[in-house]
Length: 128
Image (tube, rainbow, N blue to C red):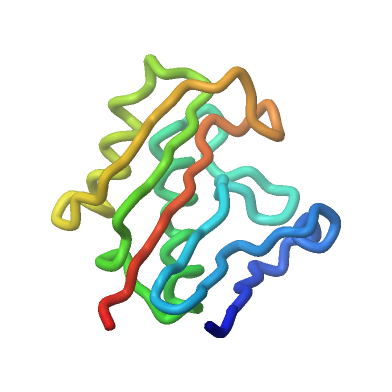
């Protein structure tokens, strides 16, 4: 099967050796995505805004891979403060309320930058 690597253009992709998303066949995996644009973090101290921004970035990567949010079958959400789960969940529901992929939300001790509160991964399967 042909492999398609999707880049967001982030400098970290080459340094760390990863892609924003990878499509092989009808499966698209989107790597952990945060609410950063370059050096700017969107939604500091606001898990709702961070979640929305990360999901918008995931949606853009899916489109580049030939998929849509409707193809998403799983999301994984990593949060630094599980007490904010409702804010994260509300944003997730705005993107996926009608799609309802399986999902996981877990608390982690830290993300790559102290102002980041949410990181999200996604798996999509396209119908053939």
